[in-house]
Image 1 (tube, rainbow, N blue to C red):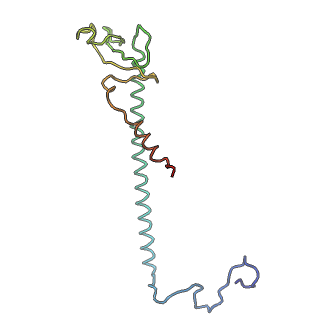
Image 2 (image 1 turned 135 degrees about the vertical axis):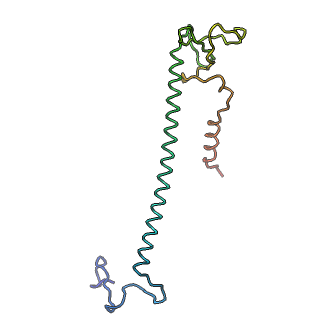
Image 3 (image 1 turned 90 degrees about the vertical axis):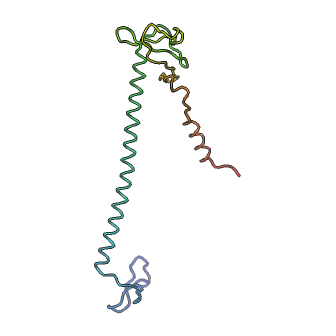
Length: 166
């Protein structure tokens, strides 16, 4: 109850003796000294600091991974740009494989003929075969057989997250 009995907004005033506590206290409870309280605060500070350090390390690792991914993307873009600037005497069609040769002046040129089409002896140095993708990126022929399971992984994750009807 409040001091004046009617107003619930006024704080409750301790009605006991001055030497008594306004809340229940047991004499059986352990006493806490200033040193114990300081040690507890220090331990809490240490735990917060450790947790903060661990969380910041996770973020730092993520930043490093993103930087590596950005470098890979930029390198792939440079390679794609270099291949798009190669001389080509025909219309490039996505999904087709083209063969890259180096001209005498050091420039690059695409051909529809592979080194095997030349009987294993192409007239110019062979620099690789590439498939033009629908997004106008280039995939090296040696990576065409590599199975890309990222779509399958995304599909499995979505299926696992989708609640099944009862």
